[in-house]
Length: 454
Image (cartoon, rainbow, N blue to C red; front, side, top):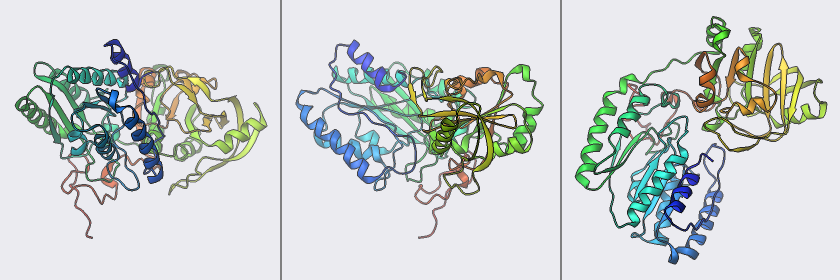
């Protein structure tokens, strides 16, 4: 599978190392991790680590890097602190992180190396694990890595972080081109801009054979990144504006994709808002597909009714997000599925999806893919499971921010980022930050953050 752990295991076993797996768990992005969940899972991990530590030469962790809990701003930093309390300071600890990690100084201090995805959509997750395995092997051979850490002075909105387009495409190429000689690893980490914590934001990491090389390279790259700040820009469309653009597009060129970014479940959205869907129906758009809408109640009702039956239901809008309400209407059940299928696109390749009972509904020319579990719409298999061939439709509305581009951009005539109600706010400057460090610009070339009075 395209996961860091898979890549690490592959290279580590290939180098002759024996793996002692301890614990694996994950969750759909949402709000803060509950304190009880964090303490239970970390406690179990540390207990297992304590049992095997005498036979260990090194530790590898496959983490995200932007975990905030009910009691901790830096969930991964605290995890590393507790792991060090078990294995000590001498044992090599290497970590792979997500592209959206908010890397804190303590995470750098308590690890020997951090590797980070270099693509968004994340098509290099396994490769990131392989780099972690190579660095850990380098450390086990007796070498030392010297780290340099830099913060960028501005936040980068998620949709502006895509590495398929400039400036991120050329910036990531510039980072990769500097690896070599004494420079063992370089990482530009755009961060997760929706976290109201002190260490939120983009960072730069350099690992080298000596400290001078690490510091000099970090300084040069920081200057380059800051000099390109003004190039970050992207238009946000209203649903009505996006429909007008799609109407002018030649259908022979492929579908026009609307990224429903603010309802992206991969960034903590609910995947059930109805703003764009209602606008499509209001403007009588003749051929559009919307997905994936999370509504287990409606999926169950569709399965009870059966294919070809009409159902009167309230679709979506059940999360209660301000400005969004369910769509009350009569829908026709076009297809049903059990929600079990395998991802075929570059992002979800090889992943066995389990989305629970699924249904394809139709109303006034608009088709809606409904699931019983939240899943970002980033793979065409999510639509083909219900008989929809994405390339054959005029408009595709995808509840995703960027990951969909890996599988859908090759078939799209155009991609439009659409601003519709949802908690994944597209422009961080609109968020009510309180804990962010003072002076950070809330978007490229945007206003600096000023802490509110106590």
